[in-house]
Length: 364
Image: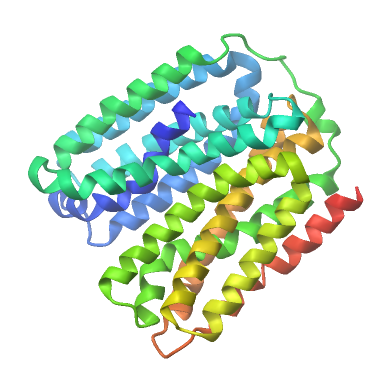
Protein backbone atom coordinates (compact mmCIF):
# COMPACT_ATOMS: atom_id res chain seq x y z
CA UNK A 1 0.00 0.00 0.00
CA UNK A 2 2.80 2.41 0.86
CA UNK A 3 4.57 1.78 -2.45
CA UNK A 4 1.41 2.23 -4.53
CA UNK A 5 0.35 5.34 -2.62
CA UNK A 6 3.65 6.92 -3.64
CA UNK A 7 3.96 5.96 -7.31
CA UNK A 8 0.24 6.42 -8.02
CA UNK A 9 0.93 10.16 -8.00
CA UNK A 10 1.87 9.67 -11.67
CA UNK A 11 -1.86 10.04 -12.38
CA UNK A 12 -1.77 13.57 -10.99
CA UNK A 13 0.71 14.63 -13.71
CA UNK A 14 -1.96 16.71 -15.45
CA UNK A 15 -1.97 19.09 -12.45
CA UNK A 16 1.49 20.39 -13.37
CA UNK A 17 1.92 19.28 -16.98
CA UNK A 18 0.86 22.60 -18.63
CA UNK A 19 3.23 24.61 -16.41
CA UNK A 20 6.12 22.19 -16.98
CA UNK A 21 5.63 22.11 -20.75
CA UNK A 22 5.44 25.90 -20.99
CA UNK A 23 8.52 26.53 -18.84
CA UNK A 24 10.89 23.99 -20.40
CA UNK A 25 10.02 24.93 -23.98
CA UNK A 26 8.37 21.65 -24.95
CA UNK A 27 5.71 21.68 -27.69
CA UNK A 28 2.28 22.71 -26.48
CA UNK A 29 0.13 19.73 -25.63
CA UNK A 30 3.08 17.38 -25.17
CA UNK A 31 2.17 16.87 -21.51
CA UNK A 32 -0.38 14.21 -22.47
CA UNK A 33 2.20 12.54 -24.71
CA UNK A 34 4.63 12.38 -21.78
CA UNK A 35 1.93 10.69 -19.72
CA UNK A 36 1.24 8.22 -22.55
CA UNK A 37 4.96 7.36 -22.68
CA UNK A 38 4.95 6.77 -18.92
CA UNK A 39 2.05 4.32 -19.29
CA UNK A 40 3.83 2.45 -22.08
CA UNK A 41 7.03 2.18 -20.03
CA UNK A 42 4.95 1.17 -16.99
CA UNK A 43 3.42 -1.73 -18.94
CA UNK A 44 6.71 -2.86 -20.49
CA UNK A 45 8.55 -2.85 -17.15
CA UNK A 46 5.74 -4.80 -15.53
CA UNK A 47 6.36 -7.58 -18.05
CA UNK A 48 9.78 -8.27 -16.51
CA UNK A 49 8.85 -7.83 -12.85
CA UNK A 50 7.77 -11.47 -12.48
CA UNK A 51 11.15 -12.85 -13.50
CA UNK A 52 12.98 -10.15 -11.51
CA UNK A 53 11.00 -10.99 -8.36
CA UNK A 54 12.15 -14.59 -8.61
CA UNK A 55 15.79 -13.54 -8.91
CA UNK A 56 16.30 -10.52 -6.63
CA UNK A 57 13.19 -10.37 -4.44
CA UNK A 58 10.72 -7.57 -3.66
CA UNK A 59 12.93 -5.57 -1.32
CA UNK A 60 15.64 -4.88 -3.89
CA UNK A 61 13.10 -4.12 -6.62
CA UNK A 62 11.36 -1.58 -4.41
CA UNK A 63 14.69 -0.02 -3.47
CA UNK A 64 15.44 0.34 -7.19
CA UNK A 65 11.98 1.85 -7.75
CA UNK A 66 12.61 4.39 -4.98
CA UNK A 67 15.90 5.47 -6.57
CA UNK A 68 14.50 5.66 -10.10
CA UNK A 69 11.38 7.58 -9.00
CA UNK A 70 13.36 10.11 -6.99
CA UNK A 71 15.84 10.70 -9.80
CA UNK A 72 13.08 10.98 -12.41
CA UNK A 73 10.99 13.54 -10.54
CA UNK A 74 14.09 15.42 -9.38
CA UNK A 75 15.45 15.58 -12.91
CA UNK A 76 12.15 16.99 -14.15
CA UNK A 77 12.10 19.58 -11.35
CA UNK A 78 15.64 20.75 -12.15
CA UNK A 79 15.57 20.42 -15.95
CA UNK A 80 15.45 23.37 -18.31
CA UNK A 81 15.25 21.61 -21.68
CA UNK A 82 12.22 20.13 -23.41
CA UNK A 83 13.63 16.64 -22.95
CA UNK A 84 13.42 16.84 -19.13
CA UNK A 85 9.77 15.70 -18.67
CA UNK A 86 10.18 12.99 -21.31
CA UNK A 87 13.18 11.50 -19.54
CA UNK A 88 12.19 12.24 -15.94
CA UNK A 89 8.46 11.47 -15.92
CA UNK A 90 7.87 9.54 -19.13
CA UNK A 91 10.82 7.16 -18.86
CA UNK A 92 12.13 7.05 -15.28
CA UNK A 93 8.95 7.64 -13.26
CA UNK A 94 7.04 5.36 -15.63
CA UNK A 95 9.63 2.62 -14.99
CA UNK A 96 9.39 3.17 -11.23
CA UNK A 97 5.63 2.72 -11.47
CA UNK A 98 6.02 -0.60 -13.24
CA UNK A 99 8.46 -1.87 -10.62
CA UNK A 100 6.55 -0.72 -7.55
CA UNK A 101 3.07 -1.61 -8.79
CA UNK A 102 4.18 -5.06 -9.95
CA UNK A 103 5.78 -5.88 -6.62
CA UNK A 104 2.90 -4.49 -4.56
CA UNK A 105 0.18 -6.41 -6.40
CA UNK A 106 2.25 -9.62 -6.34
CA UNK A 107 2.72 -9.36 -2.58
CA UNK A 108 -1.04 -8.86 -2.09
CA UNK A 109 -1.74 -12.19 -3.80
CA UNK A 110 0.26 -14.03 -1.14
CA UNK A 111 -2.59 -13.38 1.29
CA UNK A 112 -4.82 -16.47 1.79
CA UNK A 113 -7.64 -16.74 -0.73
CA UNK A 114 -10.39 -15.91 1.76
CA UNK A 115 -8.85 -12.44 2.31
CA UNK A 116 -7.11 -11.99 -1.04
CA UNK A 117 -9.80 -9.72 -2.49
CA UNK A 118 -9.59 -7.35 0.46
CA UNK A 119 -5.80 -7.24 0.26
CA UNK A 120 -5.79 -6.61 -3.50
CA UNK A 121 -8.44 -3.92 -3.10
CA UNK A 122 -6.40 -2.11 -0.46
CA UNK A 123 -3.21 -2.26 -2.51
CA UNK A 124 -4.69 -1.06 -5.81
CA UNK A 125 -6.88 1.39 -3.89
CA UNK A 126 -3.75 3.01 -2.49
CA UNK A 127 -2.58 3.55 -6.08
CA UNK A 128 -5.76 5.53 -6.77
CA UNK A 129 -5.56 7.46 -3.49
CA UNK A 130 -2.34 9.29 -4.39
CA UNK A 131 -3.88 11.41 -7.17
CA UNK A 132 -6.92 12.17 -5.00
CA UNK A 133 -4.69 13.56 -2.24
CA UNK A 134 -2.62 15.62 -4.66
CA UNK A 135 -5.77 16.89 -6.35
CA UNK A 136 -6.85 18.38 -3.03
CA UNK A 137 -3.45 19.91 -2.21
CA UNK A 138 -2.01 21.04 -5.53
CA UNK A 139 -4.43 23.89 -6.38
CA UNK A 140 -3.59 25.55 -3.05
CA UNK A 141 0.16 25.03 -3.14
CA UNK A 142 1.18 25.35 -6.80
CA UNK A 143 0.48 29.09 -7.30
CA UNK A 144 2.64 30.09 -4.33
CA UNK A 145 5.42 27.49 -4.33
CA UNK A 146 5.79 26.94 -8.09
CA UNK A 147 5.87 23.64 -9.92
CA UNK A 148 9.62 23.09 -9.57
CA UNK A 149 9.52 23.26 -5.78
CA UNK A 150 6.43 21.07 -5.66
CA UNK A 151 8.00 18.41 -7.91
CA UNK A 152 11.23 18.49 -5.89
CA UNK A 153 9.29 17.94 -2.65
CA UNK A 154 7.27 15.20 -4.33
CA UNK A 155 10.50 13.52 -5.46
CA UNK A 156 11.70 13.32 -1.86
CA UNK A 157 8.33 12.09 -0.58
CA UNK A 158 7.91 9.45 -3.26
CA UNK A 159 11.46 8.14 -2.90
CA UNK A 160 11.08 8.08 0.88
CA UNK A 161 7.76 6.23 0.81
CA UNK A 162 8.91 3.63 -1.70
CA UNK A 163 12.11 3.23 0.33
CA UNK A 164 9.97 2.62 3.42
CA UNK A 165 8.01 0.04 1.45
CA UNK A 166 11.29 -1.68 0.60
CA UNK A 167 12.14 -1.92 4.30
CA UNK A 168 8.71 -3.39 5.03
CA UNK A 169 8.84 -5.90 2.16
CA UNK A 170 10.22 -9.46 2.43
CA UNK A 171 13.95 -9.61 1.83
CA UNK A 172 14.34 -13.02 0.24
CA UNK A 173 14.11 -13.85 -3.44
CA UNK A 174 11.68 -16.36 -4.84
CA UNK A 175 12.49 -19.53 -6.80
CA UNK A 176 14.98 -19.09 -9.61
CA UNK A 177 12.56 -20.26 -12.25
CA UNK A 178 8.79 -20.26 -11.88
CA UNK A 179 7.50 -23.18 -13.90
CA UNK A 180 3.98 -22.65 -12.59
CA UNK A 181 3.41 -19.88 -15.11
CA UNK A 182 4.35 -22.22 -17.95
CA UNK A 183 1.69 -24.71 -16.85
CA UNK A 184 -1.19 -22.20 -16.86
CA UNK A 185 -3.59 -22.99 -19.74
CA UNK A 186 -3.45 -20.42 -22.51
CA UNK A 187 -7.25 -20.23 -22.55
CA UNK A 188 -7.24 -18.99 -18.96
CA UNK A 189 -4.69 -16.27 -19.71
CA UNK A 190 -6.58 -15.13 -22.82
CA UNK A 191 -9.88 -15.06 -20.93
CA UNK A 192 -8.37 -12.96 -18.13
CA UNK A 193 -6.81 -10.64 -20.71
CA UNK A 194 -10.11 -10.11 -22.56
CA UNK A 195 -11.97 -9.64 -19.28
CA UNK A 196 -9.54 -6.95 -18.12
CA UNK A 197 -9.48 -5.15 -21.48
CA UNK A 198 -13.25 -5.16 -21.96
CA UNK A 199 -14.05 -4.34 -18.36
CA UNK A 200 -11.56 -1.47 -18.08
CA UNK A 201 -12.04 0.15 -21.52
CA UNK A 202 -15.27 2.08 -20.78
CA UNK A 203 -13.86 3.50 -17.57
CA UNK A 204 -10.59 4.55 -19.18
CA UNK A 205 -12.42 6.45 -21.93
CA UNK A 206 -14.73 8.15 -19.43
CA UNK A 207 -11.77 9.10 -17.24
CA UNK A 208 -10.11 10.75 -20.22
CA UNK A 209 -13.25 12.70 -21.16
CA UNK A 210 -15.15 13.23 -17.88
CA UNK A 211 -15.02 17.03 -17.83
CA UNK A 212 -15.89 17.26 -21.52
CA UNK A 213 -18.74 14.79 -21.07
CA UNK A 214 -20.18 16.88 -18.27
CA UNK A 215 -19.85 20.06 -20.33
CA UNK A 216 -21.48 18.39 -23.34
CA UNK A 217 -24.40 17.44 -21.12
CA UNK A 218 -24.90 21.11 -20.29
CA UNK A 219 -23.40 21.08 -16.79
CA UNK A 220 -21.65 24.25 -15.64
CA UNK A 221 -17.95 24.46 -14.68
CA UNK A 222 -18.69 23.70 -11.03
CA UNK A 223 -20.75 20.64 -11.87
CA UNK A 224 -18.11 19.49 -14.36
CA UNK A 225 -15.53 19.64 -11.58
CA UNK A 226 -17.87 17.68 -9.34
CA UNK A 227 -18.22 15.08 -12.10
CA UNK A 228 -14.47 14.54 -12.23
CA UNK A 229 -14.31 14.28 -8.44
CA UNK A 230 -17.19 11.80 -8.34
CA UNK A 231 -15.46 9.65 -10.93
CA UNK A 232 -12.24 9.62 -8.90
CA UNK A 233 -14.07 8.92 -5.64
CA UNK A 234 -15.98 6.11 -7.33
CA UNK A 235 -12.74 4.61 -8.63
CA UNK A 236 -11.22 4.63 -5.14
CA UNK A 237 -14.38 3.33 -3.49
CA UNK A 238 -14.77 0.56 -6.06
CA UNK A 239 -11.23 -0.64 -5.48
CA UNK A 240 -11.59 -0.69 -1.72
CA UNK A 241 -15.11 -2.10 -1.52
CA UNK A 242 -15.19 -4.63 -4.35
CA UNK A 243 -12.25 -6.65 -3.08
CA UNK A 244 -13.78 -7.01 0.37
CA UNK A 245 -17.18 -7.88 -1.13
CA UNK A 246 -15.67 -10.48 -3.48
CA UNK A 247 -14.26 -12.37 -0.48
CA UNK A 248 -17.87 -12.94 0.55
CA UNK A 249 -19.75 -13.46 -2.73
CA UNK A 250 -16.97 -14.75 -4.97
CA UNK A 251 -14.65 -13.09 -7.47
CA UNK A 252 -16.64 -13.88 -10.62
CA UNK A 253 -20.06 -12.75 -9.33
CA UNK A 254 -18.48 -9.49 -8.19
CA UNK A 255 -16.93 -8.99 -11.64
CA UNK A 256 -20.26 -9.75 -13.31
CA UNK A 257 -21.89 -7.08 -11.14
CA UNK A 258 -19.23 -4.55 -12.15
CA UNK A 259 -19.77 -5.24 -15.87
CA UNK A 260 -23.55 -4.94 -15.47
CA UNK A 261 -23.23 -1.67 -13.53
CA UNK A 262 -21.06 -0.22 -16.31
CA UNK A 263 -23.63 -1.16 -18.95
CA UNK A 264 -26.52 0.39 -17.01
CA UNK A 265 -24.55 3.58 -16.32
CA UNK A 266 -23.56 3.99 -19.98
CA UNK A 267 -27.16 3.48 -21.05
CA UNK A 268 -28.28 6.22 -18.70
CA UNK A 269 -25.58 8.62 -19.92
CA UNK A 270 -26.47 7.86 -23.54
CA UNK A 271 -30.21 8.55 -23.36
CA UNK A 272 -30.45 11.61 -21.13
CA UNK A 273 -28.43 14.68 -20.19
CA UNK A 274 -30.20 15.30 -16.87
CA UNK A 275 -27.53 16.47 -14.39
CA UNK A 276 -28.56 13.95 -11.72
CA UNK A 277 -28.31 11.08 -14.21
CA UNK A 278 -24.96 12.29 -15.56
CA UNK A 279 -23.38 12.60 -12.12
CA UNK A 280 -24.81 9.29 -10.94
CA UNK A 281 -23.68 7.59 -14.14
CA UNK A 282 -20.13 8.87 -13.79
CA UNK A 283 -20.02 7.74 -10.17
CA UNK A 284 -21.23 4.27 -11.21
CA UNK A 285 -18.65 4.02 -14.01
CA UNK A 286 -15.92 4.98 -11.55
CA UNK A 287 -17.08 2.38 -9.04
CA UNK A 288 -17.20 -0.35 -11.69
CA UNK A 289 -13.79 0.56 -13.13
CA UNK A 290 -12.26 0.50 -9.65
CA UNK A 291 -13.88 -2.86 -9.00
CA UNK A 292 -12.46 -4.39 -12.19
CA UNK A 293 -9.01 -2.99 -11.35
CA UNK A 294 -9.08 -4.67 -7.93
CA UNK A 295 -10.79 -7.93 -8.87
CA UNK A 296 -8.80 -8.98 -11.94
CA UNK A 297 -5.52 -9.34 -9.98
CA UNK A 298 -7.30 -11.35 -7.29
CA UNK A 299 -9.10 -13.50 -9.88
CA UNK A 300 -5.78 -14.13 -11.64
CA UNK A 301 -4.18 -15.28 -8.40
CA UNK A 302 -7.19 -17.51 -7.70
CA UNK A 303 -6.66 -19.23 -11.06
CA UNK A 304 -2.87 -19.52 -11.22
CA UNK A 305 -1.62 -19.32 -7.62
CA UNK A 306 0.63 -16.81 -5.93
CA UNK A 307 3.91 -18.27 -7.30
CA UNK A 308 2.87 -18.06 -10.93
CA UNK A 309 0.99 -14.77 -10.48
CA UNK A 310 3.79 -12.26 -11.27
CA UNK A 311 4.61 -13.84 -14.64
CA UNK A 312 0.99 -14.39 -15.65
CA UNK A 313 -0.39 -11.06 -14.45
CA UNK A 314 2.32 -9.13 -16.27
CA UNK A 315 0.82 -10.52 -19.49
CA UNK A 316 -2.75 -9.95 -18.39
CA UNK A 317 -1.96 -6.34 -17.46
CA UNK A 318 -1.06 -5.46 -21.05
CA UNK A 319 -4.84 -5.54 -21.63
CA UNK A 320 -5.11 -2.36 -19.58
CA UNK A 321 -2.62 -0.56 -21.81
CA UNK A 322 -4.41 -1.73 -24.96
CA UNK A 323 -7.78 -0.64 -23.57
CA UNK A 324 -6.36 2.80 -22.90
CA UNK A 325 -5.83 3.28 -26.62
CA UNK A 326 -9.60 3.64 -27.00
CA UNK A 327 -9.53 6.97 -25.15
CA UNK A 328 -8.01 9.05 -27.97
CA UNK A 329 -9.97 7.09 -30.59
CA UNK A 330 -13.43 7.53 -29.07
CA UNK A 331 -12.94 10.65 -26.95
CA UNK A 332 -14.11 13.06 -29.63
CA UNK A 333 -17.22 11.06 -30.50
CA UNK A 334 -18.54 10.75 -26.96
CA UNK A 335 -18.14 14.47 -26.15
CA UNK A 336 -20.19 15.89 -29.02
CA UNK A 337 -22.31 18.67 -27.41
CA UNK A 338 -25.50 17.91 -29.40
CA UNK A 339 -27.76 16.46 -26.71
CA UNK A 340 -27.62 12.94 -25.18
CA UNK A 341 -24.57 11.03 -26.27
CA UNK A 342 -25.81 7.94 -28.08
CA UNK A 343 -22.22 7.29 -29.13
CA UNK A 344 -21.58 6.41 -25.50
CA UNK A 345 -23.27 3.11 -26.30
CA UNK A 346 -20.13 2.29 -28.29
CA UNK A 347 -18.34 2.05 -24.97
CA UNK A 348 -20.60 -0.84 -24.03
CA UNK A 349 -19.31 -2.94 -26.94
CA UNK A 350 -16.13 -4.12 -25.10
CA UNK A 351 -18.36 -5.37 -22.29
CA UNK A 352 -19.68 -8.14 -24.57
CA UNK A 353 -16.35 -10.01 -25.00
CA UNK A 354 -15.60 -9.30 -21.34
CA UNK A 355 -18.83 -11.06 -20.34
CA UNK A 356 -17.99 -13.95 -22.65
CA UNK A 357 -14.53 -14.24 -21.06
CA UNK A 358 -16.15 -14.25 -17.63
CA UNK A 359 -18.37 -17.13 -18.74
CA UNK A 360 -15.31 -19.05 -19.96
CA UNK A 361 -13.58 -18.59 -16.60
CA UNK A 362 -16.72 -19.71 -14.76
CA UNK A 363 -16.93 -22.90 -16.84
CA UNK A 364 -13.22 -23.66 -16.30
